[in-house]
Image 1 (tube, rainbow, N blue to C red):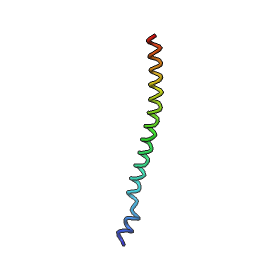
Image 2 (image 1 turned 180 degrees about the vertical axis):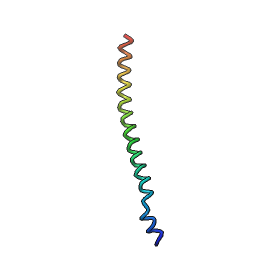
Image 3 (image 1 turned 120 degrees about the vertical axis):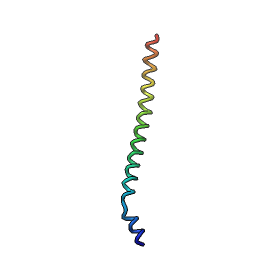
Image 4 (image 1 turned 90 degrees about the horizontal axis):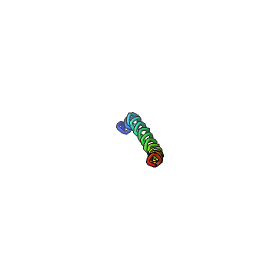
Length: 54
């Protein structure tokens, strides 16, 4: 019974999980923004390239 109580009171793993969740959310936000801005940037460069080649 003493081991179960110590495991339940131990919060060191909770901090690691919280950091992992934060890192995961930041990664998802970064990938989403890079996808959106990457598509817009590609369209802009294609447009500028086609206008310069005329």
